[in-house]
Length: 74
Image (cartoon, rainbow, N blue to C red; front, side, top):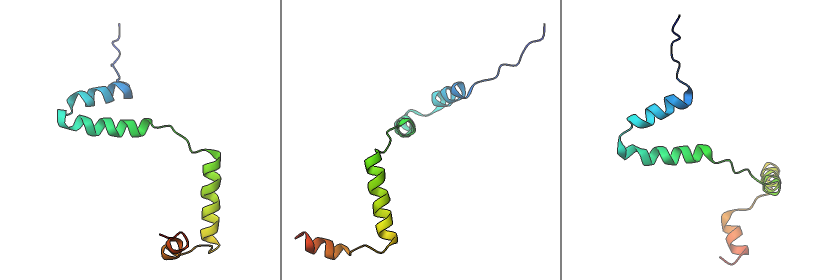
């Protein structure tokens, strides 16, 4: 019978690496993994507003921050 070499999956490799991390680095890893797992998508309305803003910038429809503050009484 031929023995097959055990091949670790990516998940197994990740688990093994996590187990070797020093305790003080685990919080950093947790933050990083949480960011990777963040699947919130931008709404259609937000995408449209961003596109509109980018089009305004491209067309030169902008004002200075000073003008913005003045028009809003800030």
